[in-house]
Every structure is written in structure tokens, then in C-alpha cells.
Amino acid sequence: MSLPSGISARPVFPGAHILQGSSQGYVIAIISAMLLAFTAIIIRVLTEYYHLPTFVLAFWRAALVALVLLPVLLLFKPEWARLQRAQIPFYACYGLLLAVFNSLWTLSVALNGASVATILTYCSVGFTVFLGWMMYSERLSLRQLVVIVVSLGGCFLVSNGDSLGNSHFNLLGLVVGMLSGIGYTLYTLGGRVATERRYPVWNTILYVFGFSAVYQWLFNAALTFYPLEAFHGMTGSLWFLSQGVQGIEWGGWWLLLTLAAGPTLLGFGLYNISLKSLPLAVANLILSLELVFTAAIAYFLLGESMNQLQLLGSALVMGGVLMLKSKTAAT
Image 1 (cartoon, rainbow, N blue to C red):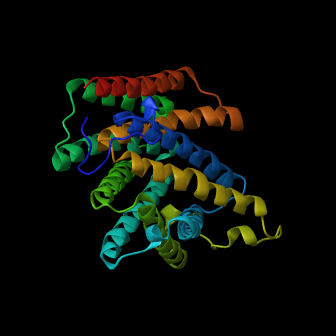
Image 2: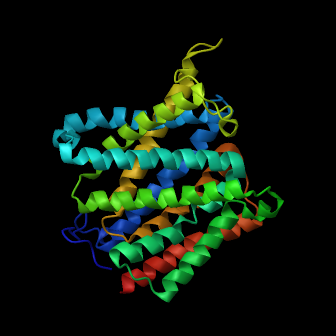
Image 3: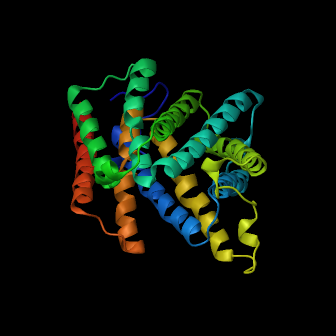
């Protein structure tokens, strides 16, 4: 597998063969999936235990990423904190894309339920294959395409897709769910474009999430003043955790900060880094391991168990990634 022009294939740690060449992208992408797996766990606690409205959560998740990252960059890499005038249009559009994707994902969950919404979002692998072929001439072998199909089947099973037949599946829910998958693919494509423009990864994360927070604030404000039935209960005061009879709920604020600094900041940052050495479809496929890791974490931390179909799906997803890696390493 060839690297994009101008990207060095040297390992990050000298002598570490596992991080040489394309293997470096695989390792980084898998670590990213592990970090992102904690996202659903923390969000579940915030929404079910603290009853935090979804759009308020989305705002703080994006805003805290920027607020945490900015002082770190100013302290250690101030040049990465600079925003050039030429970058503003791209980051503004990229941030809007991220905000819209998060909104579509939220609406898809409300219309379809978490299981079906997850399945539809991970159909983005197919969209990514198409865009990678159209825009970057990324040729995938028949074996790789079979692996993608098998892994998508694994995603279906891990996300408890066996209950699909019992769900009320309406046309609006299908359209919104598929759009969320396309939005996820376009976010991946935006990361590749930023890499090609030589924008530092952490500079991109800082301003994309900063713009996204502004858009999320506008979404929440608009839906508060002009409520829609589909978003009932998903909007509220941005200071939700500092109001009420219990006063300031510090536990919720700490969880929000953890969500922003850990799974979101490091997870998305490492994922964008992996795009330097992996094709769009391969990086997106590896990220589907998030489903497997989330199921395992939920089992140990929340007491949730996996049925036999979910265990089979986990094996399919992990097997698909291993097959894809072994094929790439041999070429």
C-alpha cells in the first residue's frame, strides 16, 4: 500500500517493527477505535443518569474539545494553534459537516432506535469505498470487498441487528439513518482533505470542533425557540448540570470533560492521523471495531452481556480487520 505524497513511512519509535510502514496506520486506527468505544458508555450515563439533553451534550462535547486542546497547543506547539485566513472557509464547512452529522445521528437514534441507527451509520463503509475509488483511485481487490461485506455483517450482529424485524422501520427513519452514514463518510473525507493540505491534525481538530460547537449552540437555540416534535426532550439550557434542586452536579461535569478530552479528542485525533497512511475505506472499516470494544466495555462496566449472535458478529469484525491487514502487509 503506497503512502500519500509527502508522508514519511518511518516508524514513530525506532526499532519498533509493528509501527513500520502501513502497520503504523493500523495500530493508530485500532487505538482510536478503542478510545471512541468509551463514547457510547459515557453518553449513556450522562443521558440516563443525569438526564442531560442530547443537543446540550453535543454542544459541550465539541466545546470542551476546543477548550481543552487550545491551552495545550499554546503551551507546547503554539504554531499549531494559529488559524490562517485561508483555513477559515474549510474549517467552517468541516465544522458544519460535523455538527450536521451529529444531529442526524441523534435524530436517527430517536426515529430508529440505537440498534438500527448504528447499522445504518456503519453502512458508511460502502460510501467510503465509492468515494475512495472516485476521488483517490483507491483500488480494492475482490478479497478486500468480501472482507468489507463480512465485516458489515458483523457490525449488524454486534449492534443487535437481529431485532431489526421487530422494529418499526419507516421511510423517514431510513432516509435520516442513511444520511447519517453519508455524513460520517464525508467527515472521513474531510480529514483526508485536511491531510492533503498539510494542515496539522491537532490544528484541524481544534477549529473543526470549535466551529461545530458554535453550530450546535445555534441548533439548540433554534430548536428551543421553535421546537419540533422529533426533537422533543433533546434541547435545554446549556447549564443544565448547574441548575435544579441538587445544585451543581460536579460528577456530570467531570464526565463531560472526560468525554471531550479522552474518547473525542484523542479518538478523533488519532483517527485523523491514521488517514495519512490508510485508504479511506480501510480506516473506516477498522473504526468499526468500536462496536466490538463498546460491547466488551459495557459488559464489564455496565453489566451488559452479549448474546451468541453478537459474539459471532464480534468475531466477524475482528477477523475481517485481521484478514485485511494480512493482505495489505503481503502486498
